[in-house]
Amino acid sequence: MIPTLVESSLPRSAEPEAITTVFRNSTIAVAAIAVVALVSTIALGQVPGARGVWMTLAPMPDSRTEVGVAADHQRLFVLGGFARSDGQTIAPLAVYSYEPIEDAWTHLTDLPSGVNHAGLAYLDGALYVVGGYARASFIPTDRVMIYDIVADQWREGSPMPTPRGALAVAIVDGRIHAIGGSPQSNVETGAHEIYDPASDRWTIAADMPTPREHLAAAAIGTQIVVLAGRTSDTFTLTTNEIYNAATDSWRRGADVPTGRSGIAAIALDGKAYLFGGEQFDRGGSTFAETKRYNLATDSWQRLPDMPTARHGLGAAVVDGLIYVIAGGPQAGYAFSDLNERLTPEP
Image (tube, rainbow, N blue to C red; front, top):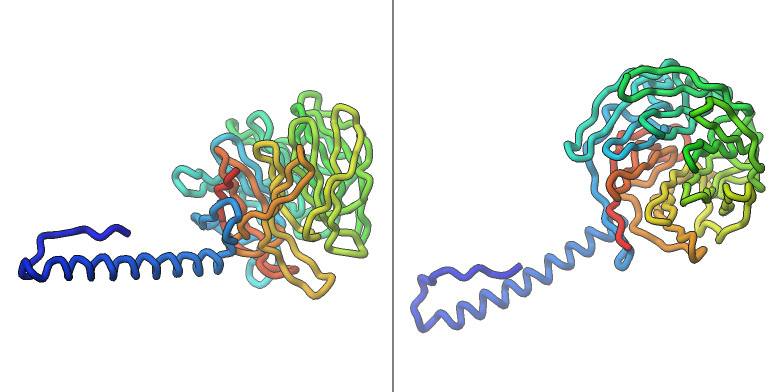
């Protein structure tokens, strides 16, 4: 802060000392402000030296966890998941869009049927809701629900060959890859199936080497980075497996530094970003940690922590900014309406 000098009402002989005092006090004030800013930054999880800045924006109209989040080039879309109503856990039907420029939410046409732990992808003007658990249950579904954004209409797609919830989806060359998930309680799968919207048909691809659920995926070019997740034995997998669509093959990448599940991931500028998660292996807790994986160098970097630790969240990118939406601040059934944005740095 630079002091503004104004005409002094002090005697001329006193001005040099007065000005010196002003600058001395201003220097002290600047130092104090810097200390406060540093303390505040650390309190918000903005680790000194970490790359990026978080901002909290307009909250969702309701609180949820285990949501689906996707984006076109201008808006974010949020649907599905769990919510609470009159003391009961429900699967809300409301679908929302978020306009970053206006920092405002809009209620779109409701889902045909409630779903939680589903995969959500945006492609060529439509949202694709893939699998998940039906309504507020843990009964896996093979259903594909497609929302035409311009027409504001829902329709059905061909069902997924393997019904499952808590899966991950990613898009490569205009086709949607559905990877992993849980086909029944305490069972995980490495199933990998590909949906072609143009033909409304599914094909079978090479299974993921490590069967898991509550994982996340991010497509970088023709490769898909599939991160972390859980099995019936552990909630804190560190597994990083990379699928090459050109060769229909998998390879192992550098492990996730902190194992967790119930996470979100996005791709931006050739890197995969990993957010949040939960663990029950050492008592239930959630993660605020944000990590960035460089596919080219097979290496990880720590970014500033999210302001709010949570699991069951979703993430998407608009104009190079990453939005992380909803999720449970506590492990298990917990809900939030949070909308936090990361401005990443190189």
